[in-house]
Image 1 (cartoon, rainbow, N blue to C red):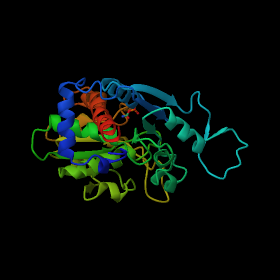
Image 2: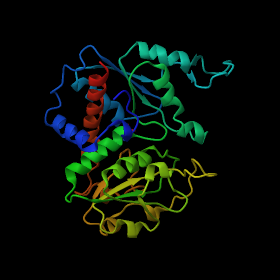
Image 3: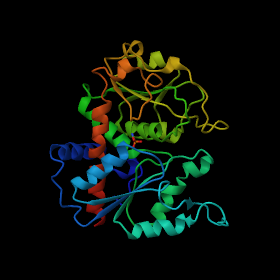
Image 4: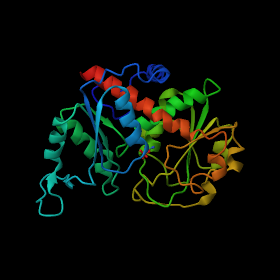
Length: 318
Ligand code: CP
């Protein structure tokens, strides 16, 4: 694996999950693999889980870890080529990236969709410049269109908790006061589609995601019907994808909040969310605090997904 930006880079999913389970038995088994190797984790956006779990994964492998918050303490970066740089951005990303690459062995990048240009977002303009100009293996810590470390952790969690060979997984849109990118739902859909499990996506009309990610998933506009018989409910908000509403909030309908009444329609489903989650918008206190809520083990598995990815990048590139 040269880079890790999507499910397409991970190869066979069973192998990846088995490797994750093996690592989980003893996270220090490969604690010299990363000796004298440096991870540089670059954040263009805020993070709690990704920041901590990725550093922890690197430390478990014996790596050094440096974290850069681009918007706090670093020079503001110009990302457009050809711009006359007489504004508030003193450094161009085309110098900054190779410089950062010269200080490390593996680069993680978090760069969300900006919602200013759908083309730039869906071309993964920032992430791809790191791949092109850093000269180092690059992995996504959530980019404009995907969050593969999260989806991998989600899959590990589903494999740990599933009670049937082919569980029914429902990804449900839920209301949120801010425009959120489609990266988490796109990516979750892409990973779950690869498992062959029963997969239903439910959202109000107008929130259709890009078909390149949702594939053959069943789209159900009736949330109650979608929840019937579900083994896992994966809640998430996202802003509209379709034109001309790209990046816009079309609904704040609180009847879509995941509550106990809706969870009662399921097959005693586990509740999942990538976090951070806005309580009583996305999910009620009662559901997220219930025994069926697995959001904490799901977040804990972020160390494991990051560690499998870093281990493979180290093994395959050094
Ligand atoms: N789920 C997730 O990526 O969390 P952070 O945004 O806190 O990193």
